[in-house]
Image (cartoon, rainbow, N blue to C red; front, side):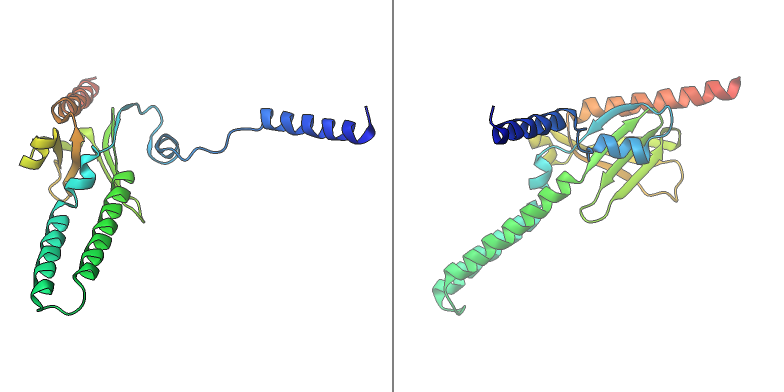
Length: 203
């Protein structure tokens, strides 16, 4: 084998070996975030849930309706001569604003995660900064399943988490899929946590 060919072959083999043994890149998944920052020793994750994709539309529905009304009004007034300029420009501006609002809703959906463990109920949310609602299950006074007309039509619902301490803010799991089933899981986890606390106190 010629020298240059042999050198190239050895280099390629070394590169292939490096790829084979190279460790995977650090994961940025929500599981890694929970393990390193949120979960306590021995804490068991019972449920990790994201809002339904309907969250993207429902969270922006009022804004979209207002912009559409303004676009229609601007088009009518422009044709009547009451507004200067071309009505196409107003239409393009409205479409640009709607696209920006929908993109914001997508970012909100991507940054929102609901977590239920055997000890706590958690909501992670936020786009530029992380907001955490964290309430121990034993300190949950009650939960309530709320379903607006829009959520009923889309098969989703919202769970309200009400802490026993009135000074603590309410938490919500908004626009979740299978809301009745998820709410039953949350209630069951709360009851198990309370029973565990009662039994531990009796010992």
